[in-house]
Each structure stands twice: as C-alpha cells, then as structure tokens.
Length: 458
Image 1 (cartoon, one colour):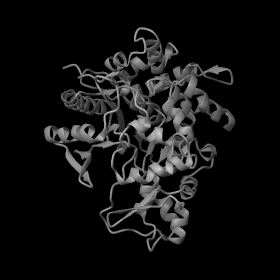
Image 2 (cartoon, helix red, strand yellow):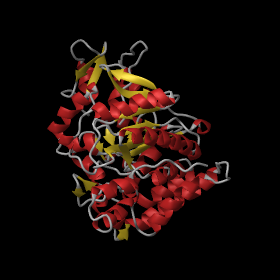
Image 3 (cartoon, rainbow, N blue to C red):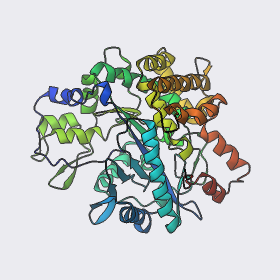
C-alpha cells in the first residue's frame, strides 16, 4: 500500500481540470529511462506458533534493529518508528504489521534480485534474534484480524473505520494480506492506456498464476487466493476492475474522472491529518473543506488511496499478485517486465484476453480466486492461457537481453514459474496438498516450511 509522503514544497492549488490530466502527461518517460520498481510485502509471525507478531515489542523492534545494523534511517510518527528510509528504497508497514520493502527503481530484474536478496538477509537475521519469521504466503495464516495489533499510523486510523462502513472484508485486507506489486513506466498517453488496458485484462491470469493464500484463521478458507477475494468486498468505489479502461478511446481524462468521484481518505495540513471520507475529490476540489483548498499534493495522496487491480499514478502498478516464497518472488517483476516492456509482447498478451466481454472478465475474476489455474473462460482452461503468458514474457525478456554476471537473461527468474504453470499448478495447490497431507494441519510444520531463510552464499 503506497505511503503518504508530505510535500515540503509550496502547495500548488488546483484551479483547472487540465492540471489533473497534466499530472499524468508529465510522468511520461522516453524508453531509455524506463525502470521497474517492486514492492514486497511479508507477513511476520512468531516462529513457535505462527501467530501474528504485534507492532509493539515485535515489528517496531525489527525496524529499530534494521536501522541500527544496516544503516536505514528511522521514520517516526507520534514517537513510534513506523518506517525506514534508505538509499532509493524504503521499508514500510501495512496496517497489520506486514513488512514491505519498496525497492529502488531498477533497470533490470537482476538489480531487483540483488536488492531483495540483501533485504531477506537483513530481515531473517534480525527476526531470528527475536523469534520472528517471515512467511512466503499471501496472507497471515493463523491470527484473526481482531487478534492483530494495528500499526499506530494516523492514516490507518482514518482508513479502518471507513473500511468497516463500506465493505465486509476491508479489515481483513488491512490486517492479514500481503502482496507483491510491480511498477512500470510509460512513454505517452497511448502507451499508458495500452498497458493499463492489457494489465487490467491480464488480472485474472496473474491472480491465478500466483495464487498463494489458501489458509487463514488457522484453517483452509476454500479459496486459492483469499487475498484476491478479499478485495471484492473491501470498498467497491475504489477496488476491483475498471470497465472504462477497455474502451479503445480511453485516455488520461477517463482515469481523472474516475478518481475525482471516489471518496477521499484524508488531507494533511500543518501536520494534522483530516478525515475526508465524507467527500469525493471532486467535491473537495469544487467546494473546499474547512478553509482548505485542493492542491496537487492532495491529488497525489488521493491517487495512492485508489486500489484497482491495475493502477495509474505517475507510473503503472500491477496489484493482483499474492506475496510469494522467496524463490518465486522475482517471477513477479520478471513476467511484468517481459510482457510490458516489449511492444510485440504487449500486443501478444492483449491478444490473449481482448475478446472477452465485460461479464466474462468479471466472472473469471471471481472464479480464479477459488479455482486459480483450474478456472475456465469460454471453455478454455486458465492454465493454458497462463502458459502462453509465461512464454510471451520469456520472449520479451530474451529480446531485452539484459544479462547477469553468469550470462543469464532475466528469463531465468521465470524457470520455476514456467514449470509450475505447465503442470497446471499455482503455489496454493502445493500448500493445500501439504496442509491436508504430510503437515497434518500442524501450524508448526506450515511455519517451518514456508519461512524465509538466509539466501545461500555465492
């Protein structure tokens, strides 16, 4: 979940609609400047019983030790350490204490892999000292939402009550779920819309390929990605699929109009967080509130509170992927980079999904939460489409030809995923089989086999 960052420059008032459109236009970058950014969320549990680690006396201490030992700068809110700032990267917390690395902007997945490996080493080392482990799952497997301490950030104090008003699963989203998000650039409005349209179309496939949250509250939940299902009843005004992106003439102004009519969460004035959940951004922009007028910083903050499955900000963000085991984590940025940073591959991926009606897209979106790669659309098994998508991504990465010291292209990060998809399996299938089989529904076995470990030395 994107974090609010205070704007230290003089506020720029929004007095014209075209300023909102220009916000996206000005983010266009030439191809040579395209980068990829990955955000990795992880659930933290006590090693001995799998229960969620509280912020107080647990996660906050992890942050303190990471700062002391590895040179991160603590970010403090109301006297509590709630995040860390590094050189081009941050470590932040989701509401339930899920630890997130928001990685640096990388020119290759090799760069992202190097950064992620260093991060895993740090958190596993510090966690072991405290009896804490981080799990390669998309959801907290044992503790219920009311058993998890909410991170004391003022943003979350506004979000929580609003979530409870507008949906039945928002509290689970905040407190239990973990995802991996991939951020990409665009060079024009046309390119941005092609990527947004294709990305939204691919949501069911990406969701199914990476489904990894079949356990919650200490038992199977009858889903392969309960995390994905949770978003369907979190906040209908700001979540899910966006039908307008599938129009051939969709542009930045369409996304602006969508964002203007979503209720706000907050504005920040002089360090004070003001609850704005009763107003849409359009109402705030038109009428103001309590003497405050809408600024571009408010617009930027508002865009971070919209949660469609593929999101437009000053970059595009793929959001439909469950958090993964470390050995599969790099497959997420790899499949996105392979598809979206090669024009032919982007078109080939769109060809996979372009013929579906809106009703078919919506039905498949819901079906993959339960069935993952076993779902069907127009009689075609999703695992066949997923196999084609992985092949397209491998082609894109081979063409981009960015190699590591061993001479491997970025396609090397898709090898394990490719083998899994060709067998018609997602990560949740393995978890379900082991939970009902050799693990004998023993949480200690689950924790032992899904916990992050120190990466092997090279």
